[in-house]
Structures are given as C-alpha cells and as structure tokens.
Image 1 (cartoon, rainbow, N blue to C red):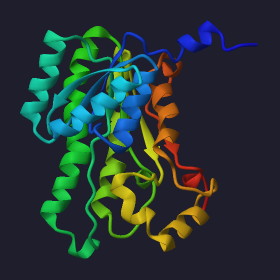
Image 2 (image 1 turned 180 degrees about the vertical axis):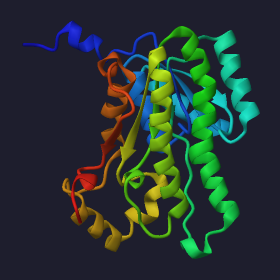
Image 3 (image 1 turned 45 degrees about the vertical axis):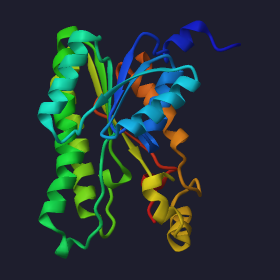
Image 4 (image 1 turned 120 degrees about the vertical axis):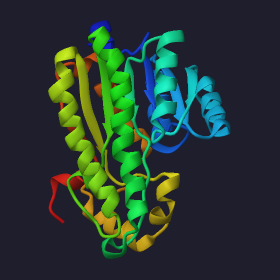
Length: 261
C-alpha cells in the first residue's frame, strides 16, 4: 500500500505560516527548512539581517518561501510591533516555534546575577512574550500550534549551566500553563526536548573527545544528534496529526532521558 493522500494530509502544512524564532542558523534554521519543505511559508527571525538573508536564500533554493521579522525576543515592544504588524498587513501566523535561546557557563556559587537574568529573560520571558502576543491572534481564530524548544535539561542537570537548566525546566511549566488556558481555544501547545546536538553553538563540546566519549556512552543511540533529527518531531507537532496532543514534552535525545547513567 502506498502512502495515501489522507495520510499525507495529516502532515501537510500547505497554506500555513510558521514563525520560528532564532532561525538564522542551527536548530532554528533546520526546523524552518523542514516546515518549508512540508509546504509552510516560514517567517525567519533573528537580530542579524545579513544572517537572515542568507538563511532565506538557502530555503528559497529548496523551493520554500520566507518572510523575515527582525526583533530580539527580550524587547517586548519590538516583538509586539512585529507580530501585530504581520498579522494586520500580511496574514495570520498559524504556527509558532519558540527556538531563540542562550547559554552561560559558570559555577553556580559564582554565577553572575546579571548573566542569570539574561538567560531567564531570553529562554523564559522571551518564550512567554512571543507566545502571548501570537496566541492573542490564534485565540480569535480558534486554532494554532505553539511549540517551545525545551531540552534534556528540562528534566536533568549538569554542572556549570544552572541558569540554562532552570530556564528549560520553566519552559516545561510554561508549556503546561499554556495548555491549561489555551487548548480550549483550539491551540496545541507542546515542547520538544532536544538532547545533545552538533551545532555551531556546541562546537566546543563536540570537539572535546572526553565529553564526546561520555555522551556516546550515556546515550543509547550511541551518537550526537544531528539537527535534521528534530524535523520530524516539529512537523508532527505543527500538523493536524497532533491535534489531540497537548502539554507534552517530546524528548528527541537518542534515549538519554529514558535511561539511568
């Protein structure tokens, strides 16, 4: 039996518009590209216009269509202006992926308060701000999909990344809170929890052979994640196939969180 039209329709994003924050590179770019391949018009977001132009050109090369919204998720006024302006003058945002995030490494007893607050402002308050402003429009339409990027650190911890760990635990709580209040309006709110992925931001860890050996030994799949490994989860949670999936954190981690190391 071939893949039927009905089965394809469950994952088809044609006619949908998806905003992916922090999508000029790495995981965000991979997710944006995957949604474009599934038929969505993708709104790329970041703070660097040149990087967004380069990302847009790459998606155009695979047949996708894009728009760009330049804003920092920690600047509420610029986020509000961008979202409301797009909705008013261009069209509805059907899917939101909250991918923008940051990291700071420091021993917890020495952790700089300003650095801690910057991580929380981006990884938690930024998710809240962008979700709230997009959800107001989704509520009026009685439909939408919001996907927050969590982490294996949502349910675990490692030394030197206390703020990041705290922020990603908060993302899971915020995802549940969104579900409790917005599922009744037809909005699917879920999260993806990536394990350790090879990206520009993790290059130092990826090139650390001692850490790599630990990771491969700790992960049942025995390898680092590649950004394309996340695309299927994003397509599922963005599509009609997940219409009764709410408040879930889908870990994409090669089995790391399923085992005891």
